[in-house]
Image (cartoon, rainbow, N blue to C red; front, side, top):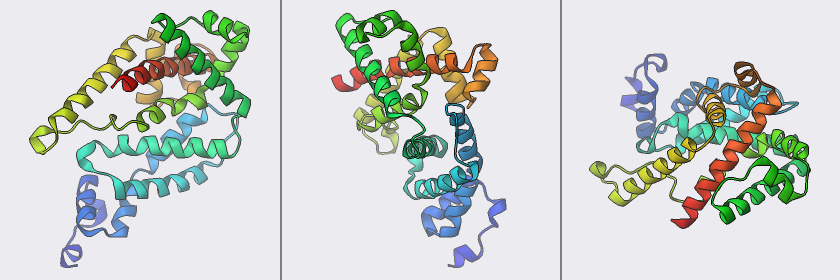
Length: 259
């Protein structure tokens, strides 16, 4: 209690200092101070995903739900396993998509067709050792190329968490352990190999697919903003995004299942 009484005011403390204090004191006010500092991250992710939907709940509601996710994440976060922003961004995105599903923003038929496309792509990839063309997938599914392209344009919501869900299903996707700090060398090597495999998978994508992923996940641009940058339609951006994630999921799923 004495330490808390002599502690610097919150606004004079860095976020790292707040985390250090919270780790020692578990003061709820510290936890919420940390969470509130990441309100902008919630807004950024919400607006980023908003471009996928035709309608959206109130942004204030998303922020309120996001703060609960943030507060819970502060309790569970281990600074030795990476950056907090990376740790919590996936959870915020998951919370928003869960809200979307609860409110039926994406019809069941859209989700089912997206899953069927993924299954077909995986089957052709496993049989041929290469990614199929759009025409091959459409032909295998018995639909027209126009129907396939429309399905891919509508598949962005389904694909947003597709890789996250894949990695969550395996215990291999963890921050590499540092052997110098008591971690296991095997875990460090496994983490490095996984990151390397993902990097190679991204490198195998077409240039426009890599660009869309970079603008969406690294620059946090919305679909319509990416469309403006690339001078193409927003549905076309959604198609490229969904196909890129689909390819990565097929490649990484094969790698993870072989491990």
